[in-house]
Every structure is written in C-alpha cells, then in structure tokens.
Image (cartoon, rainbow, N blue to C red; front, side, top):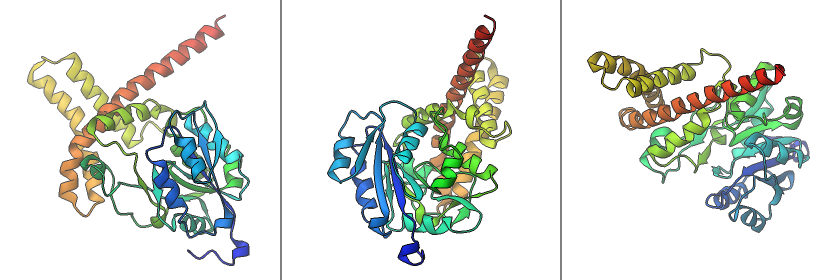
Length: 326
C-alpha cells in the first residue's frame, strides 16, 4: 500500500458505484475492488442503481455490496444519492464498467494528502483485449502522474467535506458532470491530479465507429452547458466540423469550391485530434492511422449533438419568454 501513515490515521473511504444495466461488467469491477490494498475495514461500498432491468442489483448483492435504488435521475444525481447514503471521510467514485488496479484507492488517497490537491483519480485505459477502435481511442498503459483540467467520473476521489461544500455533482447535466465538478474544484484554487496508479481499465469504451458516434451524440448534446468558454479548442473544432457537415449536406453539388470549403472545415478537427492522440503514444504512426476514422466518427457525433444542444437551448429560451409574457 502507498504511504498512508499509521492505520489509526488512515481515513475511511466510501466507494460509490453508479450503475444502470451493467450486468456484463459489474462482476469484474467488484472483483478488482475486493483486491484493493487499502484496509478493508476502512472501506464501505455502495451501488447506486439507476433503474436497472438486468441482473445488476443481484450481482452486487451476491458480492455483499449494499444496493441503493435511485430509479430516476441523471448520472450526477445517481452519484450524489450514493454519496449521501454513506458516512466515510473520503468519497471514491468508480463506474461499474471500470476495473481498478490493487493500489488504485491507496494511491489516490495518498495524493489527496498533498497540499493544494482537491481531487485525485486517474484516466481511462483501454482493455488490452479490446477492439482496434478502443485501442486507437485510449492507451493500454497509464501516463505519469500530472495535474489535469478534469478527471473522468469513473475514477474520482475527493474528501467528503469538499464534495459537500461544492454541492456534489451537477444533477441537471446528462453528460459532462465530471468536467463540471472538476472545474468547480479548480475555481477554488485546488488542483485536479491524475495519478498514474489510479488509472482504470474502462470496459465500456465504444467497440465500433458507429458506437463512437452514438456516444458522442449523447455527450455533445450538453457540451455548451459544461463549456467554460466559447474558446475551448474542442468546442471550436466541433463547430468547424458541424459547419463542414452542413456544407456537404446543403450544397452537395456545388462543385470543387464547395467541397474545398467543406474539406477545410472537416479536416482540421480530425487531424488535430489524431495527431494529439498519437503524440501521447509510443506507437505514434499506427495510432495516427487508426485515429483518423475514429476522430471522424467522434466529431460526427459531437457535431450532431451540438445541433441538438442549440435546439434544446432555443426551446428553453422560447418557453421562458412565453411564460414571462403571460
């Protein structure tokens, strides 16, 4: 176990697992948590079940895990509900489709003891047995410990006092609640730390290009809600790709000039994402070639989600104007 001092000084930890129909993955998640090198008598685990219709709850009970039923609500509310049902000093959030290493928890708790660190956790790794799409999107080896802008919700560890002071996760967001939470941590002048040993294997990564697009359609439908500024690179790239798609769809027979404009709008997001991913890997050329179709699928989904986001915001404003005019 990482250096946590005398056992009497080791904080208690509540591990919260939000889940909805995760029967395919949950056993692997719970088996890994059972192997943590953190003192077992300092850990409580709760599964916050978001209306599963499969065997998710039964699997959790078989492993001796307490199950809290939260049939309605977005993922932030499901996480918050699980946190409220526990009493430990530290909250550790892990998703049901994630597999932790034995020192996942001890490494994150040790990192929290570092002055100025508000949240610790880890990034996502692809399953070594996954598809080429999954291996293009995520590495199979962790990156060195570093300060980051945000952590994924499937590996976030935070002191309960800070979590409560921030009001927990945003319960109005269907996606991006982890980014939003980490932003509020940073707004308090605290660091968000990605710990090498606290990375998790994410079994739920999309396995195909179509699945990538569908996942990003969902995430993209709330990207305006969680963006800190209009100048965020990914948001700008998504707007560029959306304009390129609209150009292709509305002027399909506009000749070489039209296609050139579309290409100038579509290519940069795909190439920049592919190059950025490849730069982080040891197999850079192979990653670059695999990432190009994956990045195209990503931005197709994001662009369509962006249109949904604008449409939803417009409806919300119209509804507000109608009510104020009565």
